[in-house]
Length: 318
Image (cartoon, rainbow, N blue to C red; front, side, top):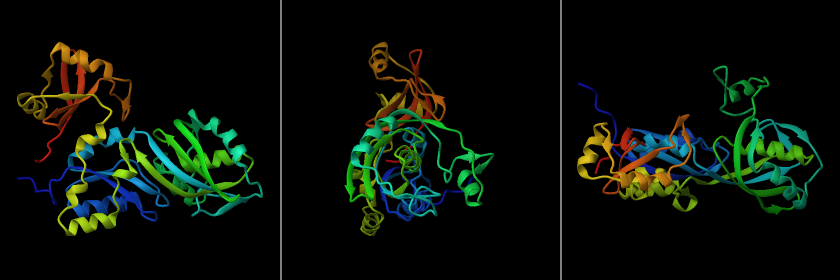
């Protein structure tokens, strides 16, 4: 007989407004404790220095994390000009200094070079693996890490404010794998200046925004009132840009057993225009859809040859 899992069988998403000076791992542990959840994980690390939107998956929602990892993210951040650090943020050691203070006009002229599909070398202090080791562990030992450039996508880049000559604030919307600290390094170099990240806040991850978020203190207060579940979003919320397929009770039963279901021709034709090229975790998901029974996620799967074949099955408690 298998051992019973510790905690409650709770599933859904919590959109945490992570405070700065807290790791993403610590944040996940705090949320798991508040909900007494059996299982928890996050969709994209947020540096301890950074605050803002950290979507945390509980229970069956952890099966949708790979989809949210691919989602667009929006950041608001401030560069402090004049000093560069080894970590490219305010917590690092000073490595260079300059009297250059880029003007708003010069900054705006430089930004278009950082929009679209661009190549970016990750920061020395990053979680990228080099020969099985994290880059930040190698960098902390005093060694220089040779990291390969990666192709990343930036959809929007905007200078939105300034505090004197030393601080400039930006809003960027990007795809997966984009590093704000690397952007600051490269933008400063392009402007012939030195600079580092002074403040960083993530304001959106896919469908989850600041407006949806909740602080740990607010969640603790709700927990004491027995109302923490009010801030729990359905598992399927993370799949908002995936075609949805409504199924009946009989088909939902088959899918939960991992069996494919046959689709009527007109259903397949209605889904086709909603498909788009995409890879999730390196796997082709261009024909992916989410099956819903009574508005609740039953399975993720692929639509091919007139059938919906489940790849991930959800067992969500009522």
